[in-house]
Length: 137
Image (cartoon, rainbow, N blue to C red):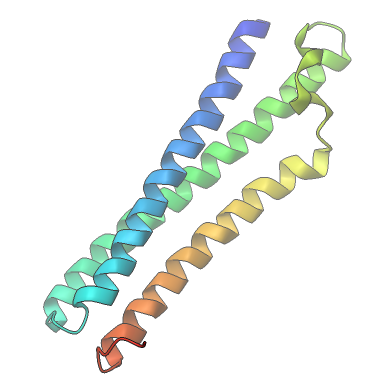
């Protein structure tokens, strides 16, 4: 793989990860807003439908984000390898000096964040549903 192809793959993985993450955050906030505004007004079947669709979308997004971040890490490892072997001019990239534990930690941390956002939003929806629907001032 040439330097240009490797750099393009790395950039595409990063951009795709961010795109999926921002879409996921939008879906989480939409579910939070729905939980806040209409959870008390929805019937059981509608809550089941909305929550099921939300859960499927969330699980897909969490999987996709995790997979893409693992691809980012693999690209970083490959960049570091070709630079260390002297076969690449990509040594100027700051990502080449990132410690190896960072490549392992980032997919785990972001996956934890996305799962926490999912669980927190579902708990919030349930809390809002069970509350009186009155807003605090």
